[in-house]
Length: 102
Image 1 (spheres, rainbow, N blue to C red):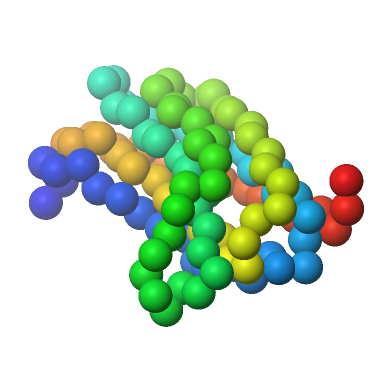
Image 2: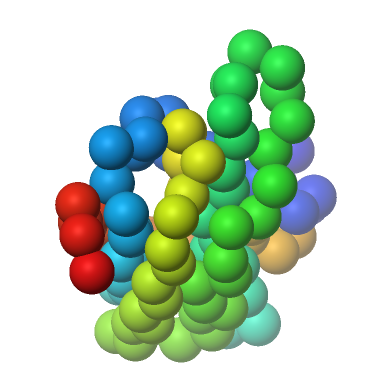
């Protein structure tokens, strides 16, 4: 039902061996009055279903815009969470890089 706001999740990535994560979110197409919130979530065990927001990357509202964010010392697993406001459409790409040291 596209009349409701919806959350979309990336696959889960194990990042325990990395010190930092840098993320870029880009809106390629987005219709008017749409807001897409992009966040990175972390957990030590994805089977427990308890995720916490590691850092908010962006709130994208117009096409051809991007936002970057970085965080240090993530827990063992991370994923990306997109929230698209009700009755709207967007084409979003999220890219990340994990680094072993500062």
